[in-house]
Every structure is written in C-alpha cells, then in structure tokens.
Amino acid sequence: MKNVKKWIALFLVLAMACSLVACSSQPATPVDNDSEPAAPAETDAGDGKLSIGFSLPSLNFPFYVRMYDTFVEECEKRGWTYQFVDGNLDSAVQLSGCNDLINKDIDILVMATWWIDAMQDVFDQCEQRGIQVYLMDNMEIPDVAKNAITFTTGTDNYNAGWVGGTWAAEQLKAQGKTSLNLVTVRSNNEMPLRRCSGFSDALTANGINLTILQEYDAGERPKAMTVIEDALVTYNNVDMIFGASAQDSLGAYDACVAANRTEVLAFGFDGEDDEISLIDKGTQYMATITQDPVSMSRLVAEKIQDHYVDGNPIDQAIETPAGVYCSQGQLDGATILEGKPAPEAK
Image: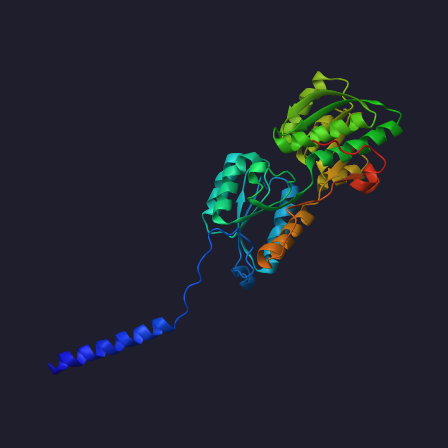
C-alpha cells in the first residue's frame, strides 16, 4: 500500500511540473490568412537553405547552356540548393517536370519556357502554395499569370527582331538595294514567330520592298538544313534567309553551302559561337541578333536575393536589350535604332 501511495505522489509531482512548463511557454502567433503573400524577411535562405526549382526548354542550345551554367554558378555562390528539369523541346515534358518540382517543397521556381500559355497550371499551383516564380528569356506575362509571376527578364522578341531588321535594311540600302526576297525558318511557337514578325516589319518600315517567299518550320539545325535545301530548289530568287534561332540560321547556312548558293545571305538570332565565327570569317552569314543569357541569369539571382531573401520591393519586369553582331563587331540596339522608326506596338 505504501508503494502505491509513493507512486501516486510521484505522478502528481510530475504532472504539476509539466503544467508549470506549459504555462511558462509563449502563446503561438496567430496566422493571418487574409494578408497578401509577401517576400519573407527571414527565411532558410539566410542560412543557405533556399530551395529552387529550375527549368529550361532545352539544353540543346548553347544559349540555354550559358543560362544554365551562370544560374547554377549563382546558386552555388550564394549557398542555394536547386533541382533542374530539362524541357527537352516539349511543352508537356516541361509542364510535367515543373509540377514535379512544385511537389518537392521548393521555395522558388525559376524558368524559361517557349510555351508560357501552356504553363498556366504551374503558375496557378505556385500562387496557391506561395512559391515565387522568376522567369528568364521572357518579357510577356499573360494577364491570368500576373499575380503568380514575381519577376521576369528577357529580350522582347518582337523588339529584338525589329533591331535586326532595322540594321539589315540600312545595310541593303547602303548597297543600293531597296527590295528583298526573304525566307524565314523557325520553330512553330509564339517566341520565334514574334522574332520573325519584328524582323520583317522593320525591313518594311525602313524602306525595303519585302516579299516573304515562304516560312518554314524547323527549330533544329539538321531539320533547318533539310527544309532550306528544299527552299533553294523551289525558289531560285532567294536573297536572304532569316533564322529565328541560331540552330535555324546555321542549318540554313549549311544548306546554302551544300548547294553552292553563295549569293544567299543568312541572318541569325542568338549570337552563338558558331555564328560569331562565321561572321568573323566574312562568310555569307551576314549577322546575328544577340541576347545576353549570362546577364539574365545574374539579374534573376540578384532579384531573388533582393526580394525573397532581403524583402525589398522590385519591379516585375526588366528588359535585357538586344543588339546585333556583324562584321563591325557588337552593336547595341539603341545605336542601331537612333533616328530610325521605333518598334510598332504589338
């Protein structure tokens, strides 16, 4: 009996001790579910634990390889972790991969995509879960995604095409040419279509009588070579081929060389090393519209630090301007457009 009383007494002492500890703890801070989501001032990112989902449309292009390498370097330098998904030139693959990233408890999604309208489900999920979205190589935010996208940078595709078309028009007129038979080659999505539109519209706006003989679907160098080989057989009066990516224009160049059509000019987009080499050698590869994937990646990393980590306000969109690389070297867009018609609102 004495043992029973002893155990009862011990139990009461322990119960009282637990009660005192509970009473001394602070009450939990209530969560305001009605407040707008904001960049946290204190996060795991400050301890080097920021988790980033990262996706690009393809690593088959040197442009995106440079973008990938630079952003990975920024993550490693800042102590951020990242998980990468390659879109493999397929909107469904990128969509599925980004959805997988979202389910892995990421804090931020960084992506470039050729299929922004197809990514709406991704943006909706990020908004619902409080995941901030930072875009590269993009300057167009769909109205339905404005609340989901925290920041975007890129070269406006139409404006970039316009810069190239303006420069090309001046070169043609300097040679006494006021008309042009043009073939375009590009993949069949919004981004390259806008590049082609900007290029052709600028030629017309700057006094070139333009005839577009045909528009071809490619997106990869071997495919571009194949379709342009057909174009050179079909049309014997092609003056210039504009490729909306380096892979398109390099494939077009390959076709011209194979057909010994040295009179046909090639004009590219992206400023890849192979393009620069051909331009420097004085081939029929006339010029390329240049973008800056390195600056895009660094800018996105800076904005993540400014906004998510440090809690500072940022602009939602900042353009990374286009230029032209030609036999005279790298020219900036502002110089090319000085005193010329401005890009039309599209």
